[in-house]
Length: 378
Image (cartoon, rainbow, N blue to C red; front, side):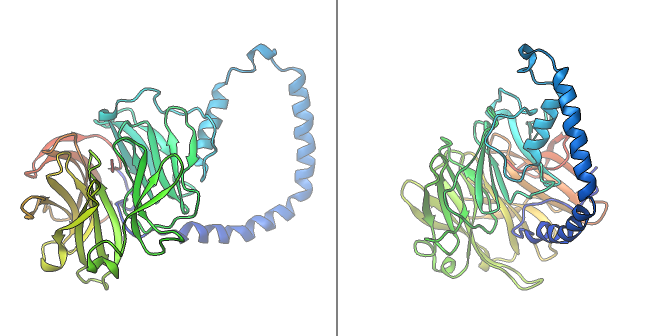
């Protein structure tokens, strides 16, 4: 069981915590460096002398190209702990052959893993020990891992382990999701840049980093023009994008929000859920559209601020609450390959924050348990 604070999708980025720790430690590191300067000089001489001895007794050159177990471990550690990974081939536990429909993306304690749909075969993709990813997404073929960190969008090829920086200019964001296009050539996310200073829904070319503004304050509802815009999800076939416009509420107050769909082909927007005219959902944390584009899973909270799962029928506009268990946060971000079931994460509201994962159908019944630690996010 996990005894740490719950890791759930949120709009609060907490970017300052790492910077504060770094600033505090800087003074201590400088004092330590001055104190040990003379000792390090002697130690360096000793290391150089030792390396000379090792070079004299090294193995023949024919074996030099064969990586040892220690070299593989160093390569893996470097890849996972580097805040901005190098564009190089590294040895990891990521499988060389993956089946797109059999993979899920898991976040646990700021670390990101890929696993089989039943939770087995868990492989680390990114360690959040030193730098926290703000958003992440696994491609439809499960061969690419995209993530947003420090105003840059990165794509890691899981077959070659090459990681590239996609954007050619600094981009900002305020949460939401990253979503791949069906053909894996583009990435949709909430962004802002020099040409688009206010938040918008953007499509970014995964090859050349070119940014196309899909939805901004000029081509959406009047409610969105003066408020925050955030990408929630995109459909499996890439035809529809779901986004939300909202006002950050005062403490313990109901959020004013509205959810819209954007049709990629026609470039038209329509409102699918008016949060201001109902009291069932006080705020939305995330949402996921079903594979057949007929239903929308909503992770939100009522007046008690306990996270629950709701289901919106996109044809009728009706919404109903799926979970209601007291004392637990419940969330569902990923449909399980069909339109009748989805992965669900449950966690205690109070310590010790015990958690569990299972598959639930649209009637709210548990149909299977999934033995993993963390939250399934894609």
